[in-house]
Amino acid sequence: MTLLSDWKPVYSGKVRELYIPQSASSLDEAEKLLIVATDRVSAFDHILDPEIPGKGELLTRLSTWWFSQFPDIPNHLHDEAPPAECDGQGMVVEPLAMFPVECVVRGYLAGSGWKEYQSEGTVCGILLPEGLSEGDRLPEPIYTPATKAAVGDHDENITYEQSVDILGAEDAAELRRLSLDLYSRAAKKCEERGVILADTKFEWGRRTQSGSITLGDEVLTSDSSRYWDGELYAGGGIDRLDSFDKQIVRNWLSENWGFTGTPPTLPAALVDQTRGRYEELIARMTTA
Image 1 (cartoon, rainbow, N blue to C red):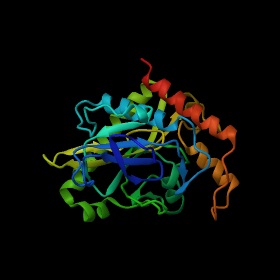
Image 2 (image 1 turned 90 degrees about the vertical axis):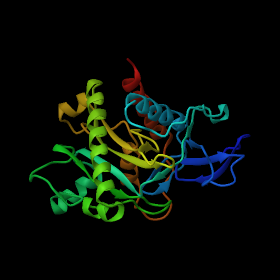
Image 3 (image 1 turned 45 degrees about the vertical axis):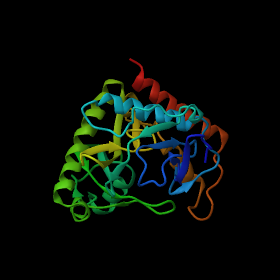
Image 4 (image 1 turned 135 degrees about the horizontal axis):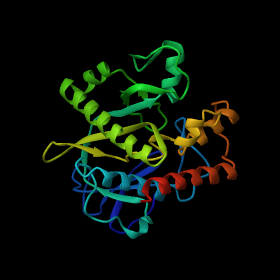
């Protein structure tokens, strides 16, 4: 973890690190937090080698931009600027009591949803029309929550009813409403820029003082979302699902690794390609 003069490390995850002020005695007592997005890349619950240079700064920039696009939605960003040592990879945020589910919204059939649909005709227990193909647009976006996993464990898709058991009926319904609304608004912004937001995950928490539900963590980044090129998708060719996210890395691993033991080292060309796609997405989205 990076050594910072005014902050001390308390947690290191797959790709991000968490700090509290030097003056705070514990995470529970901290009045603000520093989240640093590293250049590490993970896939299939493994941290891969090598890192993608500049990835942390790119994802932080995109996440911060997305937060700014929805001023009516409370988020966890703090007024204080991150320390310069973070080199653009940090966000100072307010502590939240995070809900123990990931709020996934899917507008298209892909990823684990496609795998379940092939065998069951459903996604997280939601029955879908017959005859859909991988990448097809769904009749309407669907909310498919998942449980959060620790490092080395797998996130697990759950039904909405299971989320009610975890969260209670009122909070489960509100998180579903908020997530579907935010996805629809974000997807519209993407379409205006020739980009498809196929799916994404949101994380919500409560402010410790007011108890209001607040958007936290990262939001709509290339690590938490699946983005496609609208023109390629409309062309319908074999490359219609080429992505602006780390699906490039997942695809390469699927072709070059048997999913046992240590994952292979990522080739330099793949690292460069992935970084280039991250940069292209940010340019498309943030250029007026």
